[in-house]
Length: 351
Ligand code: ADP
Ligand code: MG
Image (cartoon, rainbow, N blue to C red; front, side, top):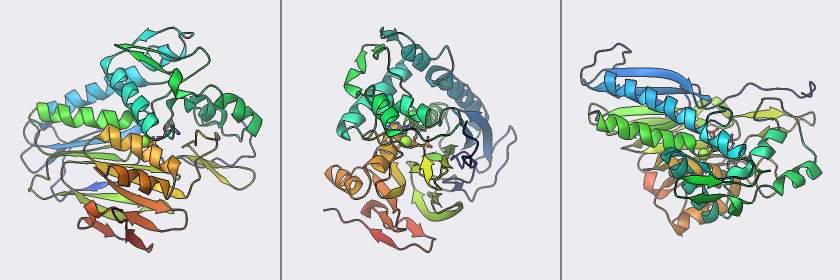
């Protein structure tokens, strides 16, 4: 590691307050629950802190099952665990590998969003992330020629999926970090529902997803961090049953010898941290996996391309923050969005 590079602490969306959710119902971590007290579980998995909070008499057992499910997903999806599907794909020397249904679901989504977004999402970018040191927290600034060479092995059309098997060329590596947590929050909320829970809110490293309304029947309130002051909230949005997923340049970064900030979302066009006018992208919608995939993709696209992309199929909502300190939000949340920052906020028009 280059010791002259100043290493900043990770403001990973792990800290509970991130995109935090506030609930007026009382909290308890005990095993029993009436309809208004929360039962919660805090765990560290998928490289992030997670908090699962559910209400009602079925909550304790449902949450226990949810924790087991998260551990299962971590085992399948981890890029480092030698037994994981992803590790097997990355080390199979180009051969097809049989993978779980979860892994296949995420891979299929990654391929389709990558194609829809003109390659802004690219799960083959892993070797480039590694070169910047984001995989081992040993940060450095790679040379352009090093990046150009690595980018030769990031062609998404080389990801071959068929049935329950996946293959990538021998010199490729993938990681599902851009959308795996969104898949996990979809799976967890569904599992809680199947276990009789009707009111729950979960935060997987700041990616928030809700089930039903609050126990008192009102909507959840989710706060989104100020990317310029990540210890503070920027806005609050009320949601029914939705995912609220943010990608920001403050979540994981280092400052190089040149004094510049380098973050963990890479523009596959040049292998550098994506710097196209946006510092934070929040996507609000019904599918956690889609919101997660899009938050990363739209961050890469930048402003105004992200707005153009949304306009083509506006079935989700956005809160965008530009590097000039302006907030833009879509009309679907105009009644439920409260700006609590000093930044100006403007509604994006539908066309
Ligand atoms: P977070 O994981 O911090 O919530 P994101 O959902 O935006 O944030 O995902 C960022 C992660 O996605 C990175 O840590 C890296 O593993 C991966 N990644 C970075 N850039 C890209 C990209 N252009 N396409 C796909 N994955 C990416
Ligand atoms: Mg994402």
